[in-house]
Length: 227
Ligand SMILES: *Cc1c(COP(=O)(O)O)cnc(C)c1O
Image (tube, rainbow, N blue to C red):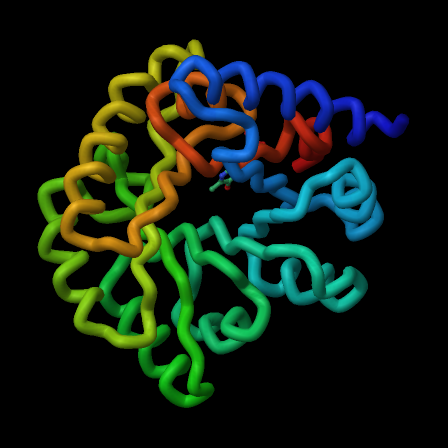
């Protein structure tokens, strides 16, 4: 077994255990392996170990890897997206996790219109109101969703957040809980809401226990990034 396969087996078990605490199971949670800075070979190893979903932060890097890997993988864009990069992700990305501003939504709408396609997206919240992070503030979410929901090419699939850096996994529970409440509230209004993308290597168990159903895990799958 490769190290990556071993890591994934452990993560699978941990995800399953956390999901069961909330009456769900492993299959109710999507594991997105965050493959930024990792080469296509390692992505292939993760695929062989059962991972179907991969998350990339940079469009250029995503395009390169996609070229050498099979088309059967699900690609997610999870990092801040520049408007001029939108046109490159419409063919192959299954879910954008980082819809964080109206100008980006407008560009997506425009480019999708041109290509006759749609894009599924999660709205990214800046749940800790950190100046260094992008995302919508919770008090602006209702208005933002309204504005985007009239755009016919964007399918609003849920919410995503990266809470402030924590000392312990449990420190982020109040943020996860807050996100869960927002998710539940807006799911009532937006029936396509399906995904709550919360939790990374250090805190995915807490996130799942608070209701996340998409975890984005890099380091715990592929090892520490060198940069
Ligand atoms: C890098 C990254 C992750 C993965 O972080 P790890 O701590 O390595 O698991 C998850 N989400 C986003 C948005 C990221 O940029």
